Each structure stands twice: as structure tokens, then as C-alpha cells.
Amino acid sequence: MAQPARPARPCGLWALLLCAAVGAGTATTGLKSHQKRVGYPNIGHVIIAPMETSYLTDVQPPVTNLSVSVKDLCTIIWTWDPPEGASPNCSLRYFSYLGEQQDKKIGPETCRFKEIPLNEKICLQVGSQCSTNESEKPSPLVKKCILPPEGDPESAVTELQCIWHNLSYMKCSWLPGRNTSPDTNYTLYYWYRSLMKVLQCENIYREGQHNGCSFKLTIVDSSFEQQNIQIMVNDSAGKIRPYYKVVSLTSCVKPDPPHIKNLFFKNGALFVQWKNPQNFSSRCLSYEVEVNSTHTELQRPFYVEEDKCQNAEPDRNMEAASCFIVPGILPDAVYTVRVRVKTNKLCFDDNHLWSNWSEAASIGNEANSTFYITMLLIIPVIVAGAVIVLLLYLKRLKIIIFPPIPDPGKIFKEMFGDQNDDTMHWKKYDIYEKQSKEETDSVVLIENLKRVSQ
Image 1 (cartoon, rainbow, N blue to C red):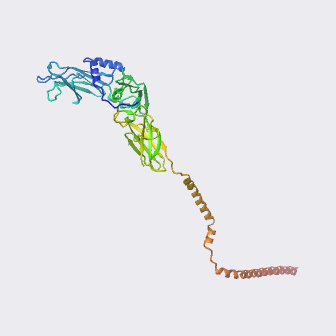
Image 2 (image 1 turned 90 degrees about the vertical axis):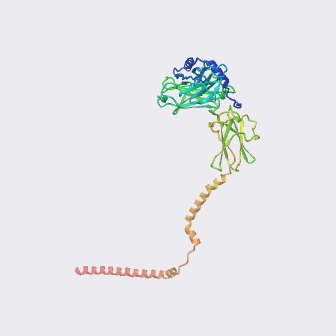
Image 3 (image 1 turned 45 degrees about the vertical axis):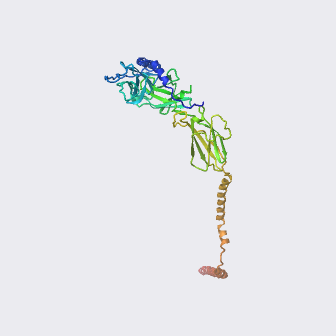
């Protein structure tokens, strides 16, 4: 659904109708009906401070019957009556302040409303004067305050955050208070202007330390995004202090991630075409395109405010599509692209709630690496085989490269080496023959001695 340009907030007429409906004497009934509607007896319990008045004879008299009431969850309404004894020729204008001279407002209305959380003391000061000229002496200020709800402040939830996901549902999460039991059963109530009554969120869940609740929230009319949503979190047993929050619907929008439809090269550039998330038009979104190349380690993010390729092809007629041109494309590279989106100031309040990244898409042909891989595998094998062969035939290779030089000494040694061997042979024979002869003589001698003795 496409959003029109954001109009001015149509609250003036609604404020008058609201003030007229509440009336001057609805402080008590408003609080009681509020408590009954929400179903929690302490909701909307306020203490009204006594009215401070002072009279001076030379100034405008103060307003009368200043009262306060709480409507819905966080809509505070102050009403008052004109001052008594005002001159009939006086064109009364009322000026009011929230807090200490803050958020000043001047007008003829005898009421003022404000959507504001009830977590702290809230005071309104009202005065009157005969015109909008601030130089005239105004009446004394009359102040009325609302005190925060009863209960231990340390028991209230903390870090309450609400996000409107893709203009379809809202998800709120919070942390338990310090003085809170772990088994606390939390309850979340919400209200916005298009609702007839305060509703209770049913989808309570827990994620780690956070508790949360989600509920359906879709656009009702063209001014729906300009509304606020009022949130209150308490527990079903009434043991913790209620916590309130007012969320602007235009400041908490998180779109779904886009979907990349086409990647193509043209004129040395990369064209990226994607489909925007549902419920958003192109002019209401800002984009970030992340491009990663195989030739570079750094990722290149591009921030895109508007469509950069009106005449891109193909599928330019695709509904809710956007396109971006990435310059400086390198040949023989693979490009991986992701896209994310967020709302812009044209239709929403500018915020930092980016969507999740889209699924990555790739394009390009990297140089054929089969040959290089094959060479990287073959070359080490060849080198290893060559080393082994070299080690096996190293000695023969040395002989071939460096042939031996003949040694003359060996020639003479071989010539005289045989004679020496013959000489040793004859020496050994003589010694053997001598020993044999001596043994024979000994045997003959012994036999002769035996004969003589006989």
C-alpha cells in the first residue's frame, strides 16, 4: 500500500470534540470509567493537588473550576471555566504550561489534552488574558497536578520498546523490574484513536531475559500513521507498579527485508533491481546496498535515497520495484549483493530501524581456475619425483659429471703385488714342511726307546 505525503496532524478538531465530550465535571467519572474499562483497580489512580489561587485587583481574575481526568490509557484532559468577573469586552485567551513553563499553548479553548505517560508527576498551569499580547498583565496561574500511580517504582518494567513491523503488527518487549518476582504474569494494554476501547494483548511471550507481546496493527485510514499508540504494562495480580508509554506510529516502523529480483551488467556497471516490502512505496523508503567482490576483501555499502536507474532493463515495470547502479565493475569477478531498507522523512519520522538484510544474490564469472588448480597439484608431485630420482642416482651422476683421475701408484702396486703373494706362499710352505719333519723325528725316537726297554 502506498503512503501519501504526511499531512499535518488533524488534532485541533478532535481536541475540541474531546473536550466537549468530557465536560467540566468529569474528573471522577472519567477515572472510574477508565479503571473499569482496563480491568485493573489501580489504573488511573491519581491524586489531584489543591488549586493554587491568588487575587490581585489590577489584573485579570483567574480561571475557575480547573479539573483533570484521564481518558483511555494516557490521555490527560484538563478543563476549566472562564474567570468570574471578567469584562464583557474582553476577548479571553487562555495560556497553559506543562511542567515548569514548558510546552506553552495559547487559545480560546477552555480545555487542553495531552497524550503523555503517567509514570511521573504531571502538572498543568492555566491563566487568562484579554488578548494574545504578552505585554498585558495575565491572570494568576492555577495549577492542577496528577501524581504517578501507586506502587514500588522498582517493581515497574524497564526498557519498554515497541516496533511496528512492516505496518502489519506491533511487537513490544520489556525487562522485569528489580523488585519483581520471576513468576510475574504480565499484562499489556494498548489503545489508539481508531479503537473504540482499550484492548488487551493476548500473545505474551518470553525471550531470554525479555518479556514481550505482539498484536495485529494495520493501517485503517490515511491519517492512521499520524496517530500515537498508548501502551501500559502491569501484572494480573496488581503487585507491580504500572508502566506507561506513548509511541508515535511514524517513529517505530521496521520494514520487512526487500527481495532482489535481477542482477545484470550494462555499460560496465552492475544494475541491482529489487522488490520493496509490501505496504511501502519506493518514495517512502531509503536503501542501503552492500556489494562484495571476489577481487576485494572490503564490502562496499552504498546509501540510496532514491531510484537511480529509471530506464533499467529488464522487468522495469515490476510493481514496487527499485534499482541502483554500481559503478566500477571489474572483469572476471563475482559480485555478491545484499539490500536493506528503512523509512524516510517523506512519509515517516526518520529513524534508524533498518530492515534485516535481504538474501544475498551473486553474479559474474570468475576466471577459469581449473588449470591453475591442476598445476598446483601436479608441480609438487613432479618435484618430489625428481628429488627421489636424484637421490637414487646421485653417485652415478657424480661420476658422469666428475670422472675419476687415474692414480699412477696403483699401476706399480698391481705390478709388484703378485710377486709378494708368491713369496709369502713359499714362506708358508717351508714352515709347514719343517713342522712335519720334526713331528716325524719325534715319533721315530719314541719307538726306538720302546724297543730298547724291551
